[in-house]
Length: 301
Image (cartoon, rainbow, N blue to C red; front, side, top):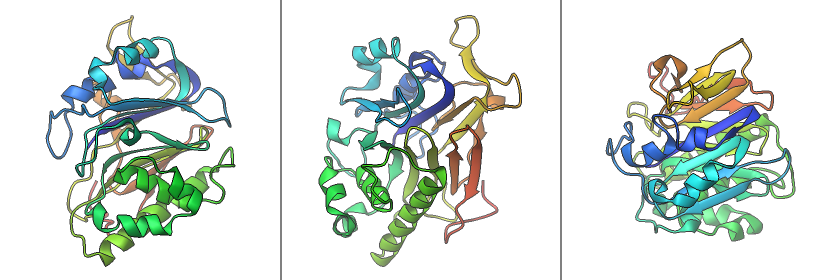
């Protein structure tokens, strides 16, 4: 179990305004998270990763480390200098006895696509070989680590045509590939007789559109937490740690999605319903789609 956030806006934000300064920033969530299903208030200290995009239709940049986010001075230095209008951030807690290594730290990148995951694929070792055998050669060879999360990214890439050479994808393409990925995982898990719960909070972007999910392979059990906030600007009040999502008009110029709200202003944040896909279009429209498969439960939020 981990924590992640993503930020998309019409204008760049200083990374520190997401990672280090808010009252419940990603740094804070690395050692004082509140909503983890397995162990509330547990540590997310098995490394971290930050991904950001400087220019449209060009690959992003990723910085990862196996150090805990709270003790990495380079992260704090970079956060005070780098600005971006599209940011992925992830603090890691290992699952499945995987190694703490940079190759296992989120996010990952393939061409212009960037991916991260909070959760786990239950019984992954029993479907890992089958997943690998399904991949095209170039995608299989791109896998560097051992996590279920990176293998899920590979499966997602396998659902797309020419993912390495293309510079952008429509949000509809990304949405369908995400749904196909979840569907395929469910089929393999069912065929292997795996009853362990899978938590599939995935996020992917091509630098233009964003697609993420809040999903669990159960009609009754809880999914890992995921919230979003949108408005005109995400900023602090008078240089304090009290950040707000300002809603100056009806337009959405900023969207933040996070495992846990970055602030304690409850009115700023909405929980993404369980087993739902959220898409952010290049024009910053936020679209919610229920994932109506065998685990869909209309009476659950």
